[in-house]
Image 1 (tube, one colour):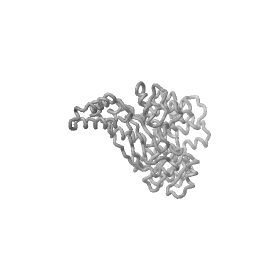
Image 2 (cartoon, rainbow, N blue to C red; image 1 turned 120 degrees about the vertical axis):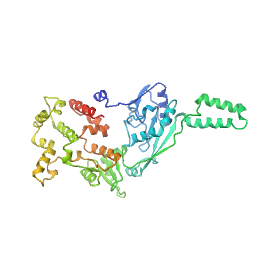
Image 3 (cartoon, helix red, strand yellow; image 1 turned 30 degrees about the vertical axis):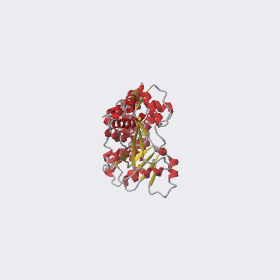
Image 4 (tube, one colour; image 1 turned 90 degrees about the vertical axis):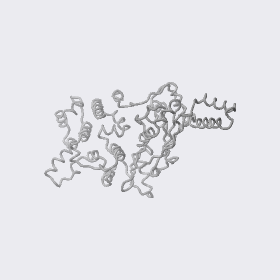
Length: 412
C-alpha cells in the first residue's frame, strides 16, 4: 500500500485534525455515544471519518449507529468536496455535497468555534431483513450543533428581546443573564447557526448492509443483488415479496440487466475501446508466469505482448484472445455463436450501463459491473476502491506499478 500512498492514490485528500479541534471531535463522538480517541492528531474525510481512528477502534464504520443509521461529523469547511473513503451507502458522498451546497455560510460560521453532527435518517430504526431496503425511498438529514450553540443563540435572542421590552433595560437580573451568555458563548446575535433538516429522495443504491446489497429500482421490475451467498439463500425463502433476487455471481444476473435495459453489450464496439485493452491485459497477466522483462514493458509493447502471449498454452491463448478471434471468424461464419468462442468473463466484463440511463444510475451500474467481474483495474479503482485495495496486495509488484501509472494517466 506504500506505493499507492506515495502516488497519492490511498488515503489522500484528507483534512488534518490537531490541537483544540481534537477536543471538538471527541465531543462529537460523545454525542454519538462513542468513546473518545486517544490520538492527538489524525485526518478526516468528507464525512468526518478518520482512517487512524477506525484503526484505533478496529471498526471501519465506527460513526454508524447500526447499519440503518450512518452519521457524519463536520469540523471544517475544508471537508467540502473531499472524498468519502468509507461510504456505507453509494449515495453518502452525494449527501455531503448536498449539505455543503445548501449551507455553505452556516458551516463556515459554525465551525469557527463549534462542530456539526449529521444524522442520516431514513426513518427505519434498524434493518431486520434485506427487504427492509425496499422501504428506503427518502433520507432525512438532521443536524446537531456541538454544545447546542443554536439553542443558546435562541436563548440569547430571547433575553435581548426581553431586555428591550418595557423598562427591562434597567433590570439587573436580565443584564447579568445577557452578560453570562455573552461570556460563555460570545455574541450570537448575527451568527448563521440555523440548519433546517434536508429531505432527499433515494431510488437505486448500494449498501454494505447484509454483506453488500444493490437495490435497483425504477426499472421493469425491482432487483436486489446480494454479495453474501448465505444471506441470498435466506432471502430466496421469502416468496411474498415481488422482486427479482440474484447473487452477484449468477450469469442470469447479467442476462437480466441486458433484458431490462440496465446494461448493454456490443462486442464489435467494445473490442475497439481502451477498456477492452485493460481487461485483456489483466486477464493475460493472470495467466502469465515468470518473465524476462518487467510487466510494465510487456504491457506497453505490442511486440513483447505478442512474444509472451505465445508462451501460453493454446487453450489459454484462445481464452485471452477470444474476443478478437470471434470478431475475425464472424466475418466469414455468419452463424457463429458468441458463447462458443468468447470466454464468459469477457461477455460480462465488457458490459456497460445502458446509454439511456440517468447519470446517477450509470454510476451505480458501473459499480455493480465492476463487482461482478473485477477485471478492469481502472474501473475497480474508480467504482470499488475497497476491492481494488484488497486485490492490489495480491498483484505482482511490476503489475502494481503499471496499474498505478494507468490510474495517474486517467486521473483528470
